Length: 499
Image 1 (cartoon, rainbow, N blue to C red):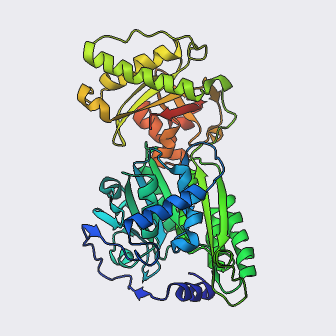
Image 2 (image 1 turned 135 degrees about the vertical axis):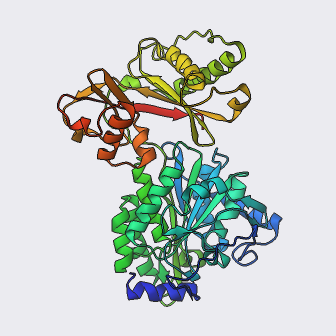
Image 3 (image 1 turned 180 degrees about the vertical axis):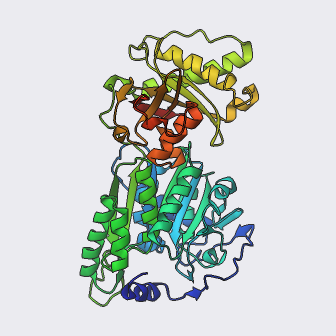
């Protein structure tokens, strides 16, 4: 439970709280259109004025470059006159990027409840128009835990979701949203939510997470600077458990602390390596009123990049640059299209020395985030570009788990390529790093392989990963990996896709 000090602060800041008992009947009715709560107060209700204000914020914002694509943002949710410029630093980095869904995770300011409320379907309206809720993604998250459900009261007065929406409409037009409000949650609930979201977005690189949160709330400017600096230090270390404990001890302040904890856990599970603070200020700096006794709120814009950790595993030449990746993706798509039209392999030549090397590779096809085919070679026996050509066609037409891909569905298919490093035999399964290593199991004439991303997509423990590999891929007993006669090989993969 939160400390008494934190509870009092919570009430001072947000004024109202409606209590719900744990055994209250869930209200699961949903509005087709969720109308705005704070248009005209937190931000202009005139569309032209609102659009112009956000454009002005984005023009002024000069965020530093970050490594890789963006996985998540932390953005403030105060009135735009106070925190809009800070929020613009994060949104400018993702502007016009190819995100199809934005998950907005916010705290509950007005309604007290336990667990996590996920909005199931419909639209959220702002002066700039309507945003569609991604109901397919919501269905993959809702009720996957007894703590994750829909409670409409969590959204009825809430502003922390709404304040993010006009920025999303301006910078990521056409994207869907998935609003999530967190109530009173234990650390385990944060972990469960991270696991559920991880499984729900498996195979997708077109999902952006936004944590909606302010920082310090109180009456002391100097205290605000000290506490916010400490809170940001936990964020920069991506120390989810330390942040959770610090909030409950009262030494840290972040109204969206629980959404941040869940997002940090998720990010680290997916291998995202760093969080950067793009900019920070507080309301006293904005107004110039820094006297003790004046209400002060802290605001920060942070980013978690999508660049996965590249550990020193395997050969350096297995990693490809941006141009080489694009070339292979183009070859894969053109090969599938040509084969579906003619029944013949694409005649293609290549001069890039890296793509001429013999490397193992897999081609994986997804349709709207769902697996549609996956075929590959662990060990390269021909130039990489030809392996990609052949495996792309095999994935589309030869995976026995699926019907062959039809030409008219190719436009809806996302292609993912995994280029593999050479196999390394190990004697100690403890050397396997989930999410980094793929594993090949071999005993006698039987064998099977899991790519590195399988661990990330399933959320399995190491024992579960190896047992499933033995039982479902290699046709061995689930505990065959413990047998000294079983050969275990590891490899890493350079994984990239069209999204």
